[in-house]
Length: 172
Length: 100
Image (cartoon, rainbow over all chains, first blue to last red; front, side):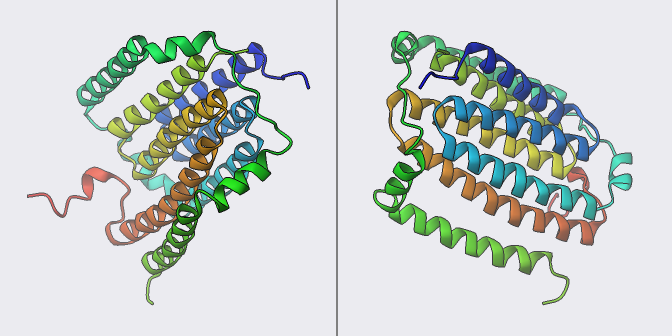
């Protein structure tokens, strides 16, 4: 099977993801931010496909773009956006934000430049994981090595369901 | 083939976007979306490393991160609705009951 992971697709998808990410933090309207975030999520799903992870890509589209973002949009519609839009969208912490971003960027650049292991990796070709059996292998991991984590995750979801209902309801 | 470092740079930039949004936004829903952006940046690096090392544990971790993100979004949005019902605002600077 010839790999579809050509540089063109990488640059296209990463450009879309970056565009969405920048729009998320610059738009004043929360609905526009949410739509830009959906663009980022879909582009990331495409990148997951390029990295031989079709299961994660599917879950990304179904759970993130289809589930969580719809929840976000519901809540944005539920609270009145006209009123909150008249309020200031950005706070006066430009200095703090700038310092935080520069410090984080410097940390990332330093780790990226200094890590010898990463530079050894750059020339190495990426392993081609078998795509056909990807879901099956993840299931084996999930129900084998990560059984406890899986069970805890299900318990966490149960707690989240109950907590969401208890907190969002007016009178129990 | 695109080397793994490109994916890591993209993931770092997405995480940085999330951090900046978290710091400068006032609307609580936008802050929440910035957190989702950060989680997605981390997920991308997980999947990139999984592809590099031929280890599927990274993809399992991404699945678990998504579960936690879903739970967090459900509870967090319920809290947002409760806050909006009580205070009639989404501005985090006006939710300052605990401030001295």
